[in-house]
Image 1 (cartoon, rainbow, N blue to C red):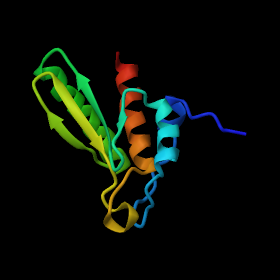
Image 2: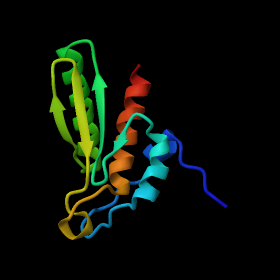
Image 3: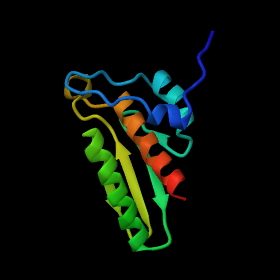
Image 4: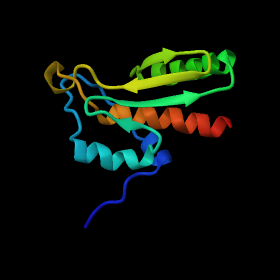
Length: 121
């Protein structure tokens, strides 16, 4: 019997755990969980989403929101900040003995960002 993927809220509510010695999710496992994150793209060793805004002020406000989420989780994304868009990329660099990959923490933090944006709208 297959298990339904978590909702955005359920994924965001999960606990972020320490990453030393973590194992990356398999593509099958990761893609199944990504159903809660439909606007994110799986790239194998990272996940990514581009958020679009009307202006630079909104882009920077969004970056500050991400900074608060990342700080609270002690799990930080790579960001590319532009005038009216922000590209967010998550991967866990020390997963799989330093090879890197997508872990549950990456998906949890991505969900927290999407949920915070949804609730602020």
